[in-house]
Length: 185
Image 1: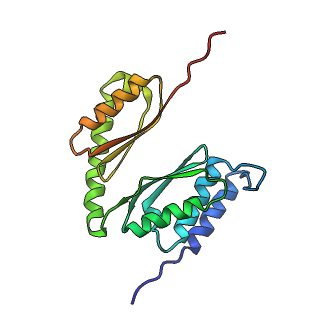
Image 2 (image 1 turned 45 degrees about the vertical axis):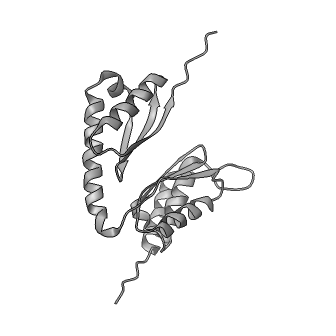
Image 3 (image 1 turned 135 degrees about the horizontal axis):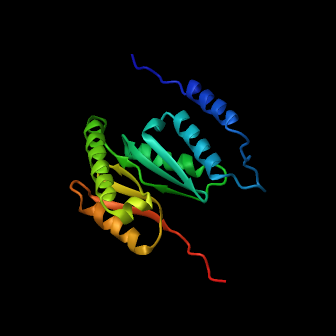
C-alpha cells in the first residue's frame, strides 16, 4: 500500500512560524512583497504540491527573482517547481538550478557534494582576500554556487577560478555581487 504524505502539518507549522516572525507584507496589486515573503510562500507552495518534494528544494529570493536549487527525481518535478514559483504573486522571474538525480543516486551525489563544498570552503579559508569576503558556497550535483558580496571583480573571478580547480567540480555558478564603492563628494 502506498503511503500518501500529508502537507497539512507542514503548512500549518510554516504559517504559524510566519505569524510569529512579525509583520509580513501582504501581496497585493499596489504593494510589492518582500523577498522573504516570496521565499516563504514559494517554500510553502512547493511543500504542498505532490509533484515536488519541497524538502529537496532550497529557495532563495533576490529582488523578486526566485532561485531554486537542490535535487528532484524527474524532469517533470523540475518543471513543476518552476511553474509553482512562477505562480507566486510578485515573482519577477525564476532561475531554476534544480538538478534531476535519480532517487537511488541522490545519497551518493549528496555525499560527494558535501565533500566538494568542504574543499572549496577550505581553499577559500587559506586565502585572506577570499576569507574576508565571506562567500557562501553550496554544491549541487558537482555544480558549485557562490553567493555573497565581494569588494571587486578580481575577488569574484578569483573565487570562481579557485572553486573550479577543486577536484569533482563540474562547473561554477558565480552569483556574487560587487560592493558599490561610495562616490566621492
